[in-house]
Image (tube, rainbow, N blue to C red; front, side, top):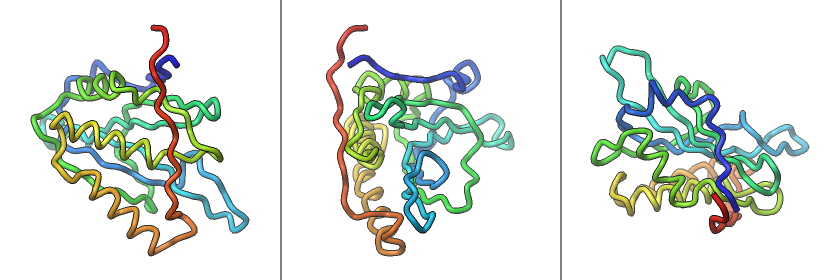
Length: 182
């Protein structure tokens, strides 16, 4: 499988050299959700890179890394620069980074580690697993603290207890594919 990356809305010249100060795993019901009979969808999960801006009074900047089943079941990694998520119903856990990685460096690393070659599980599920694997890779690289994945899993458990219809306890896992071609 070839890497499938969409970067049209990534402002690499502005954001690529900025340091990623923390990484949030963000869940929101506003993107690619499955809606049940009660019009209550499952949350979709993605990574949010929180960027250190100069001066610190500048508007906050983020880059989202969002794996979506665009050609179901195959995913495209959608990477875009944008203001922080303002969805009032979002849930997230934020993990500080270690070693001041630049945004472009972190993005390139995750792509090189196969995060842009993902096939979703039946029904379009798999974003939670994709985020967990991304945290595992960032922890192995030393860019996030040990236990980052555990913090994300704890958030999932809290959400499932609070609203089990929106946060199912089952974890469907998609598959990361080997790279084929350029």
